[in-house]
Image (cartoon, helix red, strand yellow):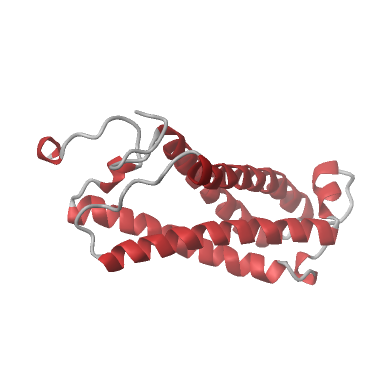
Amino acid sequence: MDLKDSRDRYGAVVVSIHWLSALLIVILVVSGFRAANTIDPIAKAAILRLHVPIAIAVLALTALRIGWWWGVDRKPAPVAGSPRWQQRTAQAVHLLLYVVILAMIASGIGMMVLSGAAPIIFGGDGARLPDFWSYPPRLPHGIGARLLLALVVFHAGAALHHQFVRRDHLLRRMWFGKVRSQARAD
């Protein structure tokens, strides 16, 4: 597998970033909802000690992916035979994923800065966590989490539809290894 994308598939760099980001985003969504629903401040701080560094890792991976495509590589062509509306929908969902991810990170940073919670979370000095709902970035962070979850489900559902209903082997484009020709794949 090449490091860079080809006309028909994604390269090793983008595939690695994609699947690592996907795993980390699932962890972020689960830990974020869990933290929001946790009353015990010690348990909430423990969850946030996991949540915040993973969010920073997702920011780094997202910036790397955007920079990779702007400066180093080009995306593969759309899936052959896909109607134009599906191509446009896929582009819109991907763009929204990036926008929501970046907005979530910005609102999370905003909450940490405005609330002063970072020293409490990472310092373990026993101080009480602030009420994050008292800070303006909390509302967009919560809305963004739900939107991110919906986009991820839609994105995964579309990929599974391509793979198992249309049987166009879309998932092979975003996986490691060589692509077999369509005639040999079936």
